[in-house]
Image 1 (tube, rainbow over the protein chains, first blue to last red):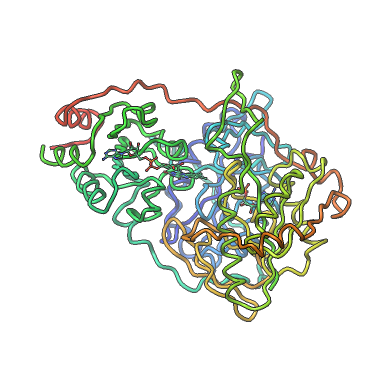
Image 2: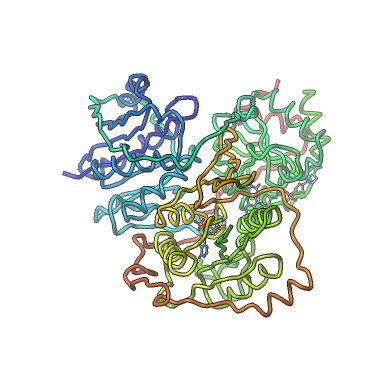
Length: 327
Length: 260
Ligand SMILES: Cc1cc2nc3c(=O)[nH]c(=O)nc-3n(C[C@H](O)[C@H](O)[C@H](O)COP(=O)(O)OP(=O)(O)OC[C@H]3O[C@@H](n4cnc5c(N)ncnc54)[C@H](O)[C@@H]3O)c2cc1C
Ligand SMILES: Nc1ncnc2c1ncn2[C@@H]1O[C@H](COP(=O)(O)O)[C@@H](O)[C@H]1O
């Protein structure tokens, strides 16, 4: 019997289970089939009154066991507190594999856990598999997305992080008889070294939730100015989508950093991605090339974005978009 | 305040050429300072300009040629630098890299107050070296730092940019921060700085100098290893070009967008 796959289950700042947990759960269920049905397990650190609210979601997403640790202080993520608790919990659970969402929280916490446990961590994976010899193989892009590397780990747990939207949550009901196990960890000697003074929610996230958008209308340097981005917004509104941007557009102040797509921004996989005035640099396309369909509007017929898109039109976005809006 | 600035030399990933066998052609690949480490440097420099008695020591683990990058940093405001270079460090993953850097800081720069790293390196882009160094040194870390607000009574206040918002955080020093891209004007070298940079002696430390055992360094000390590396698959789509906006609207509709 294998010791199973553990999914770190992040709670968001507004007390929801992060969507990446369901994506990882689905992947873990798939992997466990290649591991003599190893148990799929979750670890969640939460405020005491909230655990019941998550139970159904855990059951539905295919977890066999959910280990939970409760503490009043878990309402706000702090590296030192969470690392101290998570390290103790993971040691007790002793999984063979541990998966973490490569969110801001996951990327902050996972290396503390792996280092403390003396094991390796493969970051931002795009593919996970179990090899014939039973080893866990984590594949990730490196060198600005141009090289793929499959990485194995000599120590346990074999850890990997995965960005949101890289995997899909299960589409079918995978409800299991989930066992919930309360764990205790020792936080008595915890002396806070980090204090959160203030949190300002990004407004743009409410208005423009790229992560869940089915359609993204993205603009680059070619959209030139605020009027250009206003056109994108109108098109996005008409299609029921959101506006995204290339890094150059963000640097030009045309869009907030929160909507930057690419290597150093978000990874998105909408149904449709419309790239307007974006050249298609690798650092950009790595964040959107898993979109189901890609359409590009660009004045330069040799722009690399056309190499990865399904439909394209060579022309001035400032003429084309207003016409589309009138149709 | 003593600041240790961790910088990495990386290949210029925008300029990668492929050999016929789909491996990266490493000869002639330009090395640059990791772009995020420039922001890390800027954050450290701002502290130095704002407060008295701030000393910045740059540290890198890499080949001997990384000395050039360290001298450039000295020309623009770093006070001194340390190069960790040894054949036995080669092939290190982030775990072994962080262990080596932490051992060097412990043995050579142990009176630090603050360690400043970039958030990511563009070659590996793992974003885990910083937090791992912090863990080895048993100090707190703050990642995704957008702005360093100030420093008072042994505490540093910073603003983090997260997916969902901005968080203002106070951390007790000694601590480590990982810095995101910020809005900075690049610093230019001054003549004095350039002269100084040529005169400063940059010590090169090997494995014995920092008291690390061979088992803990380089490939041997790395829990992870690359099993296979290959060229990223290009999306195989043939772009269909359309001429008119009507056709384009039709395509948008076909792809699930309702353009009515
Ligand atoms: C470490 C690193 C990380 C990076 N991370 C990211 C990232 O996360 N995201 C990202 O996007 N980039 C990132 N970049 C930058 C990336 O390399 C490119 O520089 C960037 O994506 C280019 O943005 P762009 O396409 O908007 O601009 P450009 O490359 O300048 O392209 C503008 C395009 O607009 C077209 N155009 C001009 N006028 C019009 C018009 N009127 N109508 C239609 N088309 C027009 C032009 O033909 C051109 O193709 C990163 C770079 C580095 C080094
Ligand atoms: N070899 C190295 N020498 C010095 N600093 C490093 C090295 N590797 C990584 N770092 C630091 O860790 C940060 C994150 O790198 P990475 O974890 O590779 O994405 C970099 O921005 C540097 O500040």
